[in-house]
Image 1: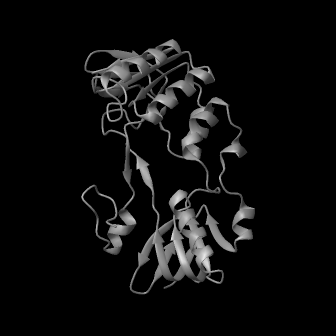
Image 2 (image 1 turned 135 degrees about the horizontal axis):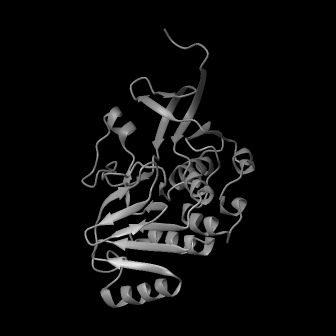
Image 3 (image 1 turned 180 degrees about the horizontal axis):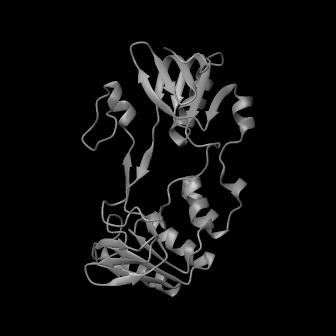
Length: 266
């Protein structure tokens, strides 16, 4: 039987995702049609924020309110409804109904702006307390409240480098950055440029290890050390920064075609 306690809403345009893409879609639609009934559904319990600024927030260079791109008044001013802290569980494209963890939404048009999720390698110990990613605001909050004197950052893309520096700036005494390729930021830099970055990192107190692959995270009840092909590194915390994957489960269940990289084909 249907759950009569669940709220039911009808809108002209539903946007699933309260990140940059979702907000741009909703606010662009408002500019095109001042009368359209628009709703944004977001799983995080906050307004749109700058995810790239999370390391600066973690380090204390930015106050929490400074990382937000939108405030609730921006949605109200543009007559855009927003449901924060509500997860879309299922979409019926034939009936044009979204099932969330709090209700049902009937829509005329739908935008999927599902974003991505951080990759955590499937190795022993990756689920121990003390493993983190730097993807969402709640991740930065969890990292900031976790007591650690030493940390290992796995992956040397922009998030990995900035996370390592933020931990040092926050007072974590020993920070090690591990990259499995021959130099840091291998997708963006050549070796000469990368070596300069590595030197700058080391001057800030970050130990840089390249050409080394993480095999295991060890600990009895929480993170205690990381084991690589070459060595073991004592640590209290691990931050995974090895990349992201598109969130597509909802789209796949709807029958939406995926592209060659695994994202929604457009």
